[in-house]
Length: 265
Ligand SMILES: NC(=O)c1ccc[n+]([C@@H]2O[C@H](COP(=O)([O-])OP(=O)(O)OC[C@H]3O[C@@H](n4cnc5c(N)ncnc54)[C@H](OP(=O)(O)O)[C@@H]3O)[C@@H](O)[C@H]2O)c1
Image (cartoon, rainbow, N blue to C red; front, side, top):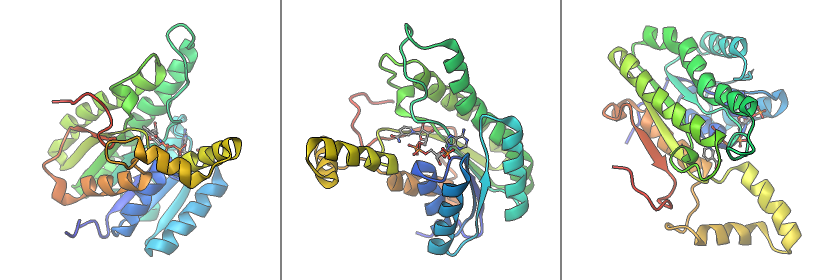
């Protein structure tokens, strides 16, 4: 099936590595021109060069910190100028899990910072992109939430900001849908990224085993015998971005390999 994404213009926040990079890669492989961003210039430029070479599409690196409103405005405006518009917004930038801590240990300053980073960062990015999305008359917004939104355990920050992005998704969907802009959220569960392999490498050295053995053991503990990877999420998000996915709007969809005990009806 042709996802009909050739020539679309996408921006992906937090995309020098991890889930954001995998989404940017898949969108570029499907024919999108893409603007990527991160706080650190070196890895960002390297990622852009690699993705452009692999996909043959335009991949523009723009340094941005989504904790900073002006930085977001600069990213979105520069991306629109470089790409000739914006059709697709992927909100992904955030530190995984936010600041650890229970209600007894976490500070309100950390919670506020984490909320600004993820929920307000996503809001500001879409606010900056709305004029371009409306001008294009067609768009997609995907907000990357996280499993702690559904199952916080004893943590505070990770859960409330992830559920905040989901509620924001519905509000965005209700407002932007009439302009031909579909908005959805996804809940990744535990996801294999470059950071996972860095952790495996340290663990393998400590325990006298191999990265491959640790990876296989992690797969074996899952329902599907496969821990979800960033590439898996990239593929699913590309499908959601397709014009063919018009019927999915204002939803929050889990991508966790079915490992959680609960089911949401
Ligand atoms: N990995 C998982 O298991 C998992 C599970 C559930 C949800 N998630 C969610 O998925 C998203 C991505 O996670 P990931 O595991 O792919 O993270 P990651 O591997 O740490 O990558 C994060 C990316 O975002 C950039 N970034 C971080 N903070 C930023 C900021 N304030 N402004 C701009 N760029 C920023 C990083 O580059 P710089 O450091 O150079 O800025 C990097 O490119 C997050 O929203 C996370 O909560 C992940």
